[in-house]
Image (cartoon, rainbow, N blue to C red; front, side, top):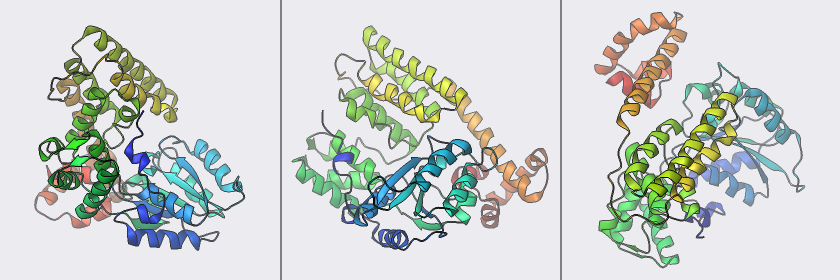
Length: 396
């Protein structure tokens, strides 16, 4: 089985990380000079731009062991305290010092429900090892307390020219026949996401023309899901299929809808369809149990069934082309629920800042929307700490 290139070309040192030179210097200085009582280091920025890899690269250069805790897998404060507390309290297995990495911090439960964020801060104060927190958006409400008490380092999208140089280098090493314009297109449409660009390069095969590269659309949710589905349905390699959803910025609920809708369009043989939906049904069963029992670390099995499980369900690849589409009826319900969730989220923030009930705050929202439509929103965005989705909702 071929190794995914995002693993094969994973940065091994700071030199291998593209486009984050200043951030790496800052990160290395903060980790190397850390002493007990210092603030945690909070790395934030879009997906695929080297945040987690930078921690490992700097740790390697400073001869530090990395102890990684994935916040998406451990959401409850009690479980987090157990896992993170043990990591902070024990010496390295290898006799060296270490750095504690809390990855995917956006997966934490909010401050107001299970107290995961305050737990991190409480444990960090006692730590003799540097604690590095990684998230895509440092300004989510649930991360407010962590953000206020952390040293922030923003990892910006990698520039087009640096992504292009990396793709060119990989193409030469892998002996790919790639047109220069094709590589430039991949570099432009990845949106600064290096990991996504490398995935696209591998998935296009050994001969890449501009025409074939143009099948990769600019990174947005729909194109991300389309690209992911194309990988799942068109490959027979489980390693590649397993990573198809790595760069997709969508909830698992939405992924279920897309795969359920399009599998029946892609797989024309009844036996292939039967095996695929058996895996989808099993993933759905696991999904329900995980939510009910809150064993979030088992989400990995849902993703495995929806990617490699569906991919390997077919006996042979299908040569026909399918225009992958959304599952219209359930998706409309999902979108409506999401819209209401945004409305509720904004109302909660407004209620908290104006000292009224959430019901009362909802009656004020039309006036807030009016302010946004007339360009008087800057102070409101700052005071209410609105995220991009909430801002978009208020502008509509």
